[in-house]
Length: 345
Image (tube, rainbow, N blue to C red; front, side, top):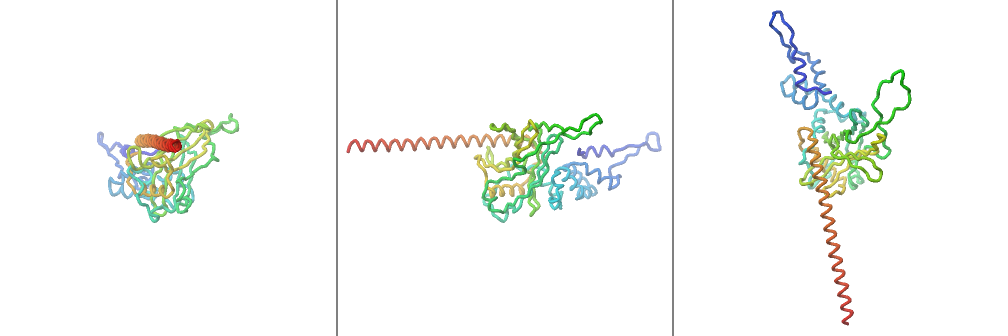
């Protein structure tokens, strides 16, 4: 578990008796060897490590150590251990600063995106946990320059249909236990946690594309599968903007995960094309970040997004109904006029 700056200060504030009866000597954190301090700093979380780096020049040098930030990135996102993701850790501190905080709610799609500013390749680092158990870590590469991706609805699949059954937590067998297969994990969707990072290898920029805890848990009426949504809403207000809709579909009875997908959804409830979705991702990568996790704020914005989407859908249905009524009225009037004209001929 990550320590904090206060914990470290308390741990190194050691008092030992001196030669006098009442005298005491104090060992400060500055008296520790640099290699010991480096090991201690690796137990800090990102925010505490960055704060400690601002305390003094000596701490700044230690807190800027790429190996420390690399270890922090690997501990936060185990999927980056994959051999094809090693190149993404050339600047681990910048990667952590981009990917750990949520993008600001003001991040939105540029009005006129150009092909030159859009990522040509996206790398997704996906880590799915159930409680303290990591049940999936995967890196997915997406060719974002292909005409098929740009013209189709934005969608990235980390896991499709074949799924997997989450194993139970491992335990040390006792001499009296049998070697039968352990039962699958009984999964609770609300206990799932997800990290989905989108990285542009060309620029090195990254963005957090999902909340860490579900903002909602829906259920498919046909199969009964639970759908945990880790949705981030960007841009707009009053239910507007777009949503990075990350979903985990699972059968909670048998601990079976069927799908893990990322889509981009518009304010009207329709899908967003790959080009428009890339523009939204690029804007979020270049935009500001929010301080703190603000999971409650993410749930509130998602609730407003769903409410606004439902209101737009109802307004569209009323408008179409009114249009159909007008067309029916015009048609009936034309038919009556035609009958009257025939009668008076």
